[in-house]
Image (tube, rainbow, N blue to C red):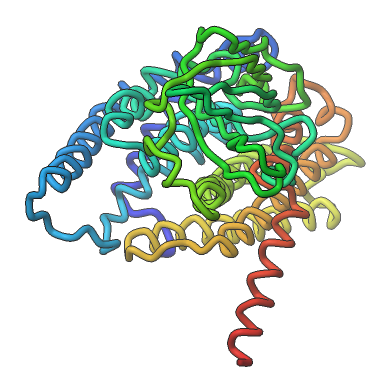
Length: 417
């Protein structure tokens, strides 16, 4: 795949038109007026039939799982070829939204991506029916709570949140921070360690599903931050929150023995990291578009600034980044269509490059605009602030380097033996 198909281009135009009509007019409210993005996202889902597609896909999945549970003979599900359009049509809204409001993608991705994906991959049939569908359709808002004030990149080693068994129930305690959708979440996947009286480093990582308003659960107001203002971020405080075993994803502690709990969270990280390439592509594409127009219109020293070689160098490097990111997105679509999974190392490498490219291009766009680029009136100012977080969340650049290098060294050692 080297370019969008005619059908994909048509969908891209429709999505862009919707965003121009519905999102651009309220961009300042999303940025500075504390307008939550959820109603806009629901309107987009309704406009393009995304909710109906999610419901149909969910119905087929649950019917199949129920048939298996009933002992019926069901054809084995394999990672076979998929329709590339189905993958492309999930990437296009991400790219187009990130040209205008990257935070909306973060809010959407954490809700229907991370939170729903955790329930769909780890939950029982009953748990999926109880919580997942409403998240997949954006009828409810989800939050995936792993980060803590003293953990950050060491998400598991320094995790202090606990679940203590008390008869047939569990008592949850802990604090989570930088939680996307935290202030508005209806459903929360809370990741913590099972307190069995053993040292914290040896404790099993488990996941519970919480509902807003439960006694002992506090969701703070949105935190003020540098960028992605359209994605509300908050803290969670749990003080003796009592839950039944029905809220333990998978319904049993056995599902988390060994490293299974950590691996489930790492799989979610991989999905999040590959999505950053599409986000970065949207940011870079818009920055380049704005810079080309400005370089032709802005006149200094008697000529458009686009005639100066240093400006041309900036524009050329932006195009190189855009092409690289577009090819990464196309590769992701092709691999999905072929049924090939993305490795943890490749997801990390993709995220590392994409985040750095978006931040560098957006900063150069501000530089090209000069004093105007530093003003909130110009879009590049927002895009530069928004791009920075791609180098931080879902694992910092430094963590991606470690993940990629360790995988390469391990594979080289195995090949040598």
